[in-house]
Amino acid sequence: MRKATSLLFLIGLAFLLTVIAAQIDFGHAPLIVGKGINAAAPTKVGSANIVAAVVLAYRGIDTLGELAILFTAAIAGGMVLGLRNADAAPDPEAGFILRTAADLLFPVLLVVGLFIVFHGHLTPGGGFQGGVVLAAAFFLPLLAHPGSTMNHPVLGLVEGLAGGAFIVIGLFGLLDQGEFLRPLLDKGALGTLWSAGTLPLLYLAVGLKVGSELASLLAHISEYEVLD
Amino acid sequence: MSGLELTPIVCAGALGLVVIGLFGMVISPHLIRIILSLAVLEGGANLFMIMVGYQPDAVAPIIVNGVIPAAMVDPVPQALVLTAIVIGVGVQAFAITLTMRLRRAYGTQDVREIRRRMEQDISRAAGVTATPGSKDEPEFPHPRNAAVRMGRG
Image 1: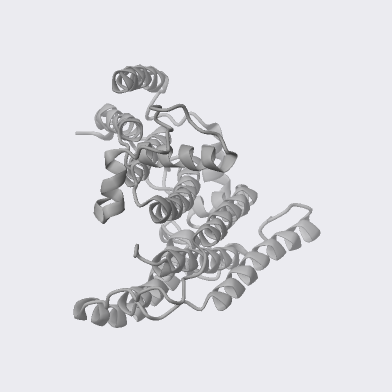
Image 2: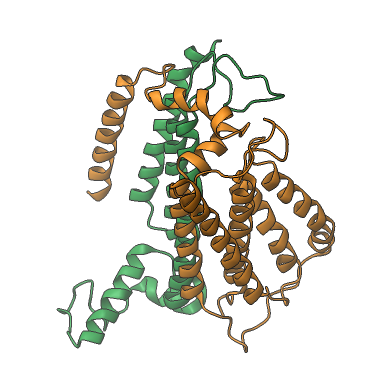
């Protein structure tokens, strides 16, 4: 009975979604703001990646809220799982391939993650994507050596400093130009590494914050005792 | 095949992913499968959002070598999807931690079983005795319960 009603509901929903989708004129973007941003962003923000300009300049305060959501998820995850029992049975050792690969991959992941973070305003990618790669770099040794633990105080410090830096840069924009998170500094030449004013700094803060948050969350999950 | 002809196919795919994800969330009683269905649903919603900003003759909104292209797709849905993906990761990670906690407390990931056990715990804590024979009755364990206690959950 429950399955039949669920199926009926889903058929109705599929029909509703199809009708809504049929109304949309695909191929012609319904938002005019996109065209305006595409035209203005290269000169006004100075960022070659216009999505980065939208994320950090036009809707920078949304990104701050997004960071707050990720922060809350990481804190809540850590609180729900708690610290590992000292007398819990140790996790099984990792295999030879994983241990060797973790040692080899750590520098590669670090370089790739930092590259993606630093080039966030020029190429696809940015703080969030690079931060996830950085988190993977610091989480991989934990998988390879199950006995070791993550240095949670240092991660918390990095996370707090990065989040504070993001807000401080935003407040500088507020004091200097009267708008929170307004891009400051010299815009530089379009498409070079030192361009787009404060955008690379903001993305660096985002990358460090996302990386440390995800690394600490993954560490909490993996440090949790396996069942009995 | 030009981009615009592919649009209905990709659009149907995106809506199909949304419906498949919801179907999995409604039908499956297993918590991990519910979380995976949520991920599928999110993928469909994100794909649909990207589709809305699509233009057949436009390129990605990134300026390469200082040459500004004639037409670029709408960057706003892409930025929104970036936000949606990050929030999705946060939600999924939190859901996984709650699932781990439930598995530890009740030894199962079946929502029906967890519901039974929670109802029992709540009524026991409140000092209420359930009517005999009802599904909240704590005294007669369900056969599935016994199997879980023996470590086959």
